[in-house]
Length: 416
Picture (cartoon, rainbow, N blue to C red):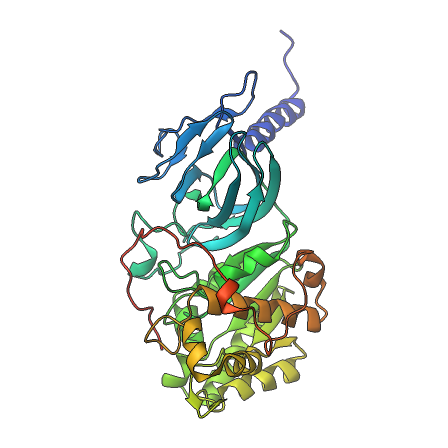
């Protein structure tokens, strides 16, 4: 055998490594054992294990159908993947019955809402899931809170987890492909933004992916109880800085917890520390004013955030940054519902943290803010998402997002 020159050998080995990397970051699963299928066949009793690298999470009750799996209860399916953004293509439907499937990812991020099929119909739907690890390039890691760790938490682990929910979710196939250089929308904030782990809590950040196409990824780094200072101390900002690219977006909404710890001037200075650090990375920063608490006096919401929302508005003006005034829009939203009906947008007994309905409507406010700010991101808003007026919210009576299974013990989020 002729010996390859050193340079040619390097190119040859590098090509093999690249090919293997591509293969390792594309995953295809077939749930019906189709003849000649090149995908990995998944049986209805395949429980996730680290050895296999895929499978249904414990508690799944799925039934094999003629073309896949189905259930009358929500079920979770996980795939071991490296950190990154992944475009997920689902083939949904059942040859024997009609189906309706809502899909959430990782920690209850709403990805796909009520995809319906008739008997015998197949449809394909795609979205992008962000998967992450605590480690930070260059050294160190994000300091996680106890609520973010454990076997039943799906955000900071070593896999991509999908929740299939609805009256009768039916799954035929899953194709997963790692997508680098995809515009990513990073979220930094508190409990009103984070991916809340358990029902009935929900936040606008975990509803946001549902409104965007597979041309963009939503990476939610917000966490309950965090202020600008504590989030920075936990190295959440460092993690985003280690990943963010010039074509990415960073939405920042803090204030609920800051106002209990620092004065307005310090808060404003802390916010400018964030914007300056992100400016060095040439990322597009969008400032978001704090979502209102449910603080009615008569039929009017009274500002409980004092001068902190104005501080955000001032920084946006001084730094020439886009602003989404969620403080103003949430006031209109709550007042449109009124003192009594607005209770149904919050977790019972809680005037700060929202349920699925409240979070969904606030996410629509954010999407409308993207449109009004004329951000390039607006081109990735899904075609079925119309303009939104918070004075005319969706009817409570017609709203429903199926509840996720109780995977974690439900505690009130940190912060107030």
